[in-house]
Length: 204
Image (cartoon, rainbow, N blue to C red; front, side, top):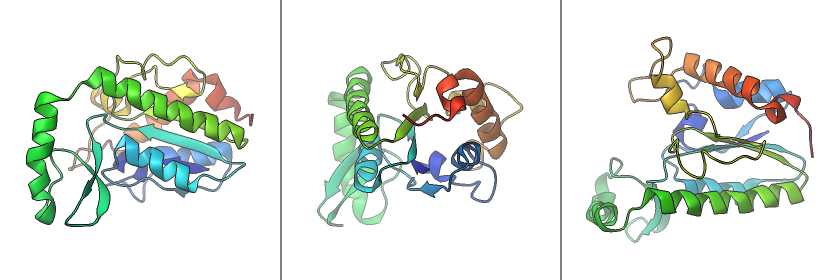
């Protein structure tokens, strides 16, 4: 099984504890290869998936906040994901640009439609390779096109993991704000109970 996503899928702050990708790999009885990266935007997640997916795999994707961007920066000579909170050192000069983008260009509904379209391309690519692919909403919006996706492998019509975590005092967040292991465990059970295609473990 191959996993793609941001820090939540990467298991930041709960590295050695039960977390969604490990729990689903156990459910599918498959070895886990986790390509998730802390701070990844949806563009970076999609780019990483296209670069690394191989045939005959189960693929899980954790959709992240659509407000993250994947831009190049001349001082580090590479493309990186950025949000308002992650500018450090040589990257601080880009913050004014991103602030202006948020102020004058940002439209969450348009971005969700854009990323939904790109994830649908990834979905077709996976199906053409004989892969099962499942999408989950980790910290995207709960009312847009992603949340309204009706396909059985789109496990996004339920509250995001972040909203699920904050909905009950039984769960909680780690110091940096990531859902704790108990939230991962309960959310995995919730997904398996809610989405039959995820529970059946059938390969297309």
